[in-house]
Structure formats: structure tokens, C-alpha cells
Image (cartoon, rainbow over all chains, first blue to last red; front, top):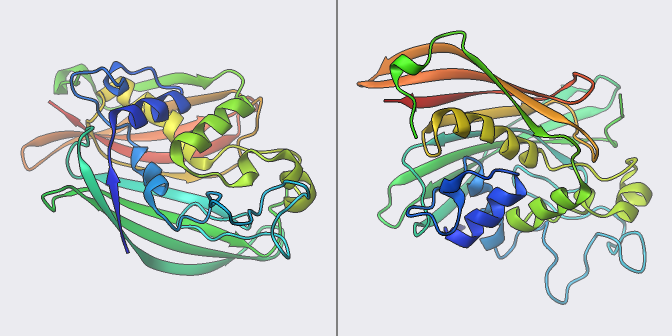
Length: 159
Length: 139
């Protein structure tokens, strides 16, 4: 499914603040507001089905009255980012043309490869790739994203 | 701002402190901006009682975003050709993060001069939390 992702100056500014980057090119009043390198990750905001955002009227797997609102715990899914049981292992971007505010991207996601590895402390690690192509209004490829999520059979042990 | 071929050479290195003391609030700020509201990153009750971690931890993408600043401060916003990382260790509230980039090659491809950079972000204990590579356009 394709997601329509309007790239807005105010959103870029909020994103830049969140990553602690005061670059003037990211300020909403810049002549040309440039997107930071990882900005396209915020396309999650425009995915109506994104599982890691509470939905109006729906139960949520984070805490409320109880430690989790999910029946049976856990929950969610997630592309490249992952749910409570999936962690983000790798992220790669290729930039084909500059991304500035005013662009309306269309994001199309497809699964990539998946593979398994034995964890250091036992338990299987299951890796899966997600590839997203972001195109502008004219159909030009702007960014290609490749995320790798890792699902563990148990909570990652602390060192 | 862009760097020219004459501004840089192989072996050049640059280090930036990304945060002196990562706050839980900055992690929440990133959740809000990115749209990734996974409770692992903001919900202490869920994290301790359900997920089994000592406290909330940062989105890998927050560390990648913060590390991107090293690259855009160096080569200018909008001048990256590629940027890819591996997340090797979790980043926790209170961590101090420092990123280092080193130019390992300068090459010309279809008339465009490119710098290949190795990046590494470490916490206060010297443990690498992110490692990766980027390629930037020079003029």
C-alpha cells in the first residue's frame, strides 16, 4: 500500500529539535527547508495502519490502568522499527535527490530478505528487511530506505 | 554550505558530542516527531513490568538522527548520497554520546566527487552504540 507523505516545514523543524540539531536549514522560516537525513522515517505519521501509534478508540499495548492494555501482552507489528519484541538492527538510506519542504512523497514498502542467526546468549535471532521507496509528485525516486528488524525469542539480555 | 575537494582529505576525522545527558523527555520528543510511539521508549511501567527492561531506552533512529548531525555539519544539509548504520547497543537515558566520522576514501563517480565516511557513535563507557558509513557529495 502506498502512503502519501506531505513533507512540511513545521514537521521538519519539530523533527530537527527532537534529534537535537539546530541547523538553520531545518528551521521552518528558512528560504528552503531541507529535510534531515533520517526525516523520511517520520512517514509513520502518515501511515493510517502504523501499529506503533495509539488509535482513537482502540486498546493500546502500553500501560494505562494496567501495565499493558494488550490482551496477552506484547502487540503491534512494525516495519523496520518493530514492536515490543522486535528491535531495529540496521537502517540504510540512499538519497537520489534533495528533499525539501513542499514535496509530497509517496512511500511504497515491500519486504526484503529474511534470515536467522544464533544469539550470543542462546535463542534465535530472526532478521527481516523492509524496503521503502519514496517518490515525489513527478514519480522521481527521492530516497530508498532499507530497514532491518530483529526479533528475538526472548528479551535482549543486558551486558 | 558544501565542502570542496580541496577542503578535505583521506584520513580527516571529526568528532561531535551529540548529547551530554540524554533525557527521557528528548526520547518522548523524538517519539512525537517521528510517530514511533512504541511504549518501550516512553512507558516506564510497561517497560519494567511487561517488557522486562530496567528503564525506557532510545529509539535506534534517534541515535541515527543525532549522528546525522555530524555528517550534515561537516558536508552541509542535503549533501548526503547514502547513510547506513547498524545499532550495536541500546542507548539509555543519562547516556553521553559522542560521534566520530573519518574519511576513508575520496573518489569521482560520473563527474561528481564523493567522500566515503566511516561513522561511529560511542557512549560514556566507550562502547559503540552505532556504527556505519555515509557518502557525501563534494563540490
